[in-house]
Amino acid sequence: MKITILAVGRLKEKYLVEGVKEYLKRLNPYARVEISEVPDEPCPENAPPAIEEQVKQKEADRLIKRLRPGTFLIVLDARGKMFTSEELAGKIEELALTGRSDITFIIGGSVGLATSIVDRADLLLSLSKLTFPHQIVRLVLLEQVYRCFRIIKNEPYHK
Ligand SMILES: C[S@@+](CC[C@H](N)C(=O)[O-])C[C@H]1O[C@@H](n2cnc3c(N)ncnc32)[C@H](O)[C@@H]1O
Image (cartoon, rainbow, N blue to C red):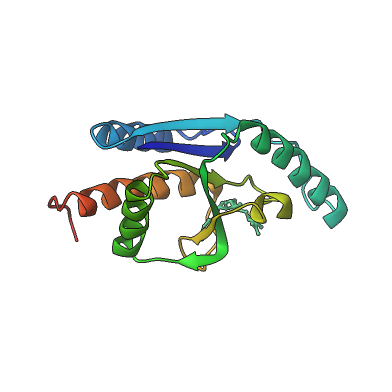
């Protein structure tokens, strides 16, 4: 299975870089997991909604260029559908069994994602109703994907 985490902005905090590295290593036996980053667009603090929309659209254009045809697109958004880890594992397994073994997860930048990205999603995934910083979302998502593979393989992992 090929999994791409397509994210707006660079991971800067050292503790998150280390965490991401650790989960990429743990995921190695289960899937080919790749992180693909597109540059974030500078956005002034307290920018009016019209400027934020422009920022999101520029970022969306960069994201769309990176999408592989046929990839199953899971867009991370707090307003999306919530899953238990077992349900998410079931979804990943179902995709693998039906030949959809190329999955892309998109994580937005600090102003979020344009509707042009949200509308393309095959699945809009919420990790919680809470809003998290995008850098933390990357680590939490990787941990959950790892947890999913442990569940799929029926291997022990902390419950
Ligand atoms: C700081 S958030 C953006 C907040 C922005 N105001 C919005 O409404 O989307 C950055 C990105 O992290 C991801 N994100 C943050 N919280 C999330 C959650 N609870 N579930 C899923 N994704 C989340 C989304 O991809 C979001 O675009």
